Image (tube, rainbow, N blue to C red; front, side, top):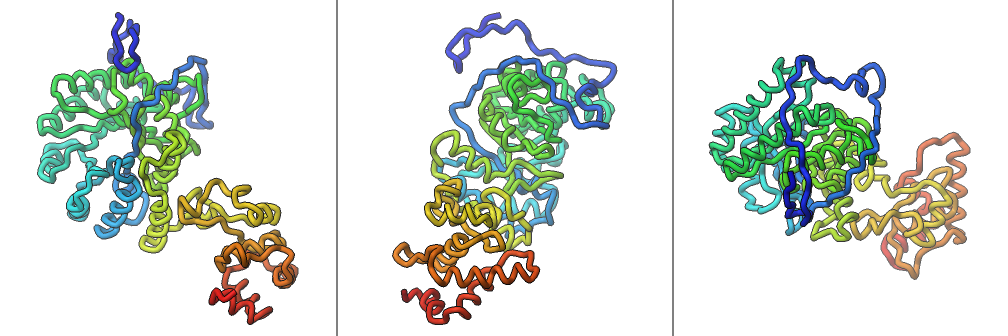
Length: 463
């Protein structure tokens, strides 16, 4: 069969239509996942062309998946974080949606308060249990889209639900039809897609959903959920772990448009950001993230990482305000008591802090030598130097210039006598057995003791 593609502007050959393949025993891909060893990566060298959508965006799951891994947020905290999401996403709504639970009175109150803000973006969506009562609740609250769990691997279909593939498909289709009857856009969460039989269940079920979409005139979204982080981005890797294969297969075989495809990954194998980016590159318009990457086990894809990734790929921030990334980190630490590992990219206190003397010497000459980009401008986070036994004269000089915000005309350099004097005091600390780095207050006190007049000038800015 030959069919014209409006997207490719070419005739495409399609001789295979997805059909559900019922099996007596579950396909658990034991050659890849034997459970007693590290999961294997296999290749078939089939190359999938990149297929970047015209438009890409980010969705948020901080208040759904993310909140499952932290102390519950209060309504006020959710509203403040939602405001920060709106500000970060900018007028174009690069952060397009944010999903919420509706289980408790507190959940529903948070949804109401966020919707009262009147933002176009992020749009409030929900995640519900697949029953009549929850669908009615979504409708009553004026929510236009909801997530529905449709687990797609045989691990879940056979071992968890004790169903056959046909039974699972019919159960899911019944649930989706209920959403459509209410005029609600269903977002089908294909749980555990990276351990699922793509041709035997995933593609045919997605194809059925697209036929339902055509009949109803209501969009049906598909969220490809890499539930255990098994996704692989490498070219030529085999299904079910291939991120390019999953996305391109859903587009080509199941005829799912890019704008209805979303990727949701976890970080169990340190691949969450790369896999999300790969999903974009191979035809998925939306990637689902959480602030700071919070979420079950190793967490979700960090939203702030994908905001930066977006700018890397598109060559523009498209109106996003990256300084809000620092505001989000500060709010998590100050208001929620959340501990961010200091080396965490973009949000950790030390992500652009150096302790090496040779690096500090480079920063002293030109920040661009050892800083990833203008972090002071984009993230309100100037590059810093932590002073310890390895900092050297350059590190101390850089610390003074940064801590006291010295203008160019009054910056010190590593040859200044005060820098040498401070280094002598610092070296003595470590000779006496100190192992921790010097705090800002400690270094400030050393300067006060060494040269009270200079310290006064530095503090009151009277150079």
